[in-house]
Image (cartoon, rainbow, N blue to C red; front, top):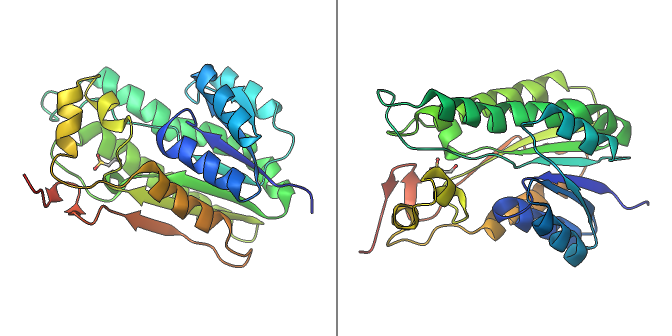
Length: 244
Ligand code: 8X3
C-alpha cells in the first residue's frame, strides 16, 4: 500500500510537533505546516516529512499550502490558541477576533480546502484538537471558551454532514498540557504561565500525540467521535489539586 499522508497544522511546537513525530513513527508521510518555517523545516528533516509554510488565518496561505498537497488521508487541525484571560467586562474585542480567526476559521479553512482530497482518499480522517474549554465555560475563559465551543460545533456538524462519506471525524479535547499555550495566552509572561501548572503534573504534548496516533490507527469502521483528556490532578478547567 502506498504511504499515507497526514497534514498537521500548528506543527512548529507542542501538540502539533509531537503528533507529527508520532504519526511519522507509525509510518505516515507527514506534511507539517506552521508560520515558523525554520522550526517545521527542522522537524520535517527529523521525521522524513515535508514542511510547507502555513498561516491558517490567511486565505491565500491556506490555498497555496493545500495546492501543494497532492493527496491527504488525515488532517490534524491543531493550530489554535488563547489570547488573554480577561473577564467579559474587560474583554478586548481584537483578542476575541484573533481567537475566532485562528481556532474557528482556521479549522474551517483547512477542513474545507482539504475535504475533496480526504474524500478521494477513500479512508480520510479529520482530527481536531479542541479543549476542555470547548465543554466547560470558566472564569476568564470568555473568548477562548466561545472559540473552542464553536470549534466543537463545527467538528460535530462535520461528522453529521459526512455520514455516508469515507471520512471519519474526531474531536480531542485536552485539559492542562504544558506547551507554549500559557505563555502565548499571557503574552509571554513566564511567571503567569508557570503558575498554571504549579504544584501539579500537567499532561505533555506526547500524551495528546498518543491519542492522535491511536485515533488515526483505528480501523475504517470505527469512528472515535470525542475524547476528553485531563491531567489526573484536575477534574475540570479550574478545579485542580496542587501540592504547594
Ligand atoms: C487549554 C486548556 O484549561 O486552558 O485548551 O482551557 S484550558
